Image 1 (cartoon, rainbow, N blue to C red):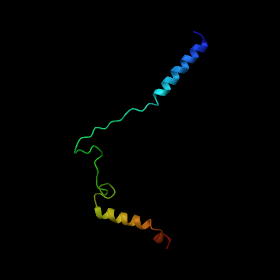
Image 2: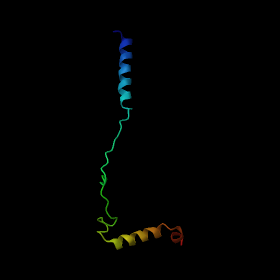
Image 3: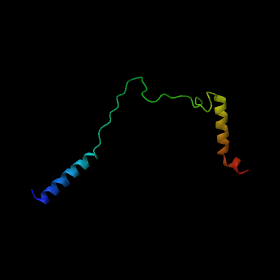
Image 4: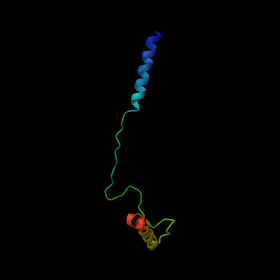
Length: 75
């Protein structure tokens, strides 16, 4: 086989291998009735910062909201 034929065959193989990465495989989810399959949710105050104290979390949210009010920040 000559060099030109070998190069064209090599180019065809490289193109075929390159195009295999462009294919999209179907992603099918199987749902089970009545079961949540995602991450379990927790309350926002159940973390190491607030240690389950809902009142402290609410106070922190109020202070954060006050800090985002432009009228309060400019005075």
